[in-house]
Image (cartoon, rainbow, N blue to C red; front, side, top):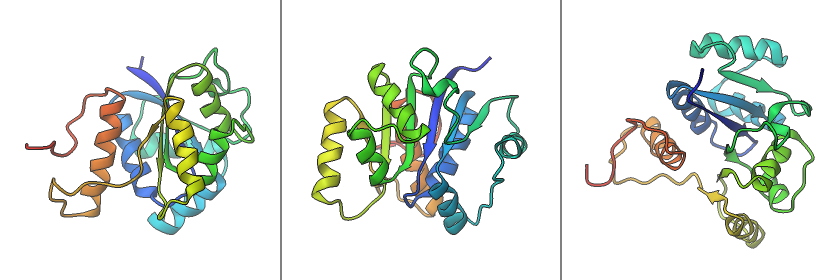
Length: 201
């Protein structure tokens, strides 16, 4: 029914616009998306993008299906306590996960193997099953603790992709900068796309 499945998690770091653009790109690529939003992510989404999404998960799923004109269950929004959802178990979870943006608190929890909420548990599942995990931190400057946690994850095979867009494509808008990072994610997931210009194009 769908080309593939992916877990997309959103935490309370700045950079909600990147998440919105990535979600749209994954829908357009005919992916099924298990969507996990932390409480802090909803606050940042409201603050940065003036987006006020429904609190109840059933209402949120209905909202997302209408907003993105998706197939049924193409976006499956989950709550932090949906421990019986597919993403919580290695026997059923997608083998790809992106955390965009990823707070340094979430990054630290994953690096230490904690599973205090569904986002952390989903990442833990990806790691133990040797899947593909992309974390996209947005912080500056990075402390030594942040850098050590990133190194730990990198040594475990995680792709650490800070939200730090390039400028060689001569961006004219904030959307151009968001597209740069979304295109990099799509490349790493090996999903074909036509987002933005590549080097020397």
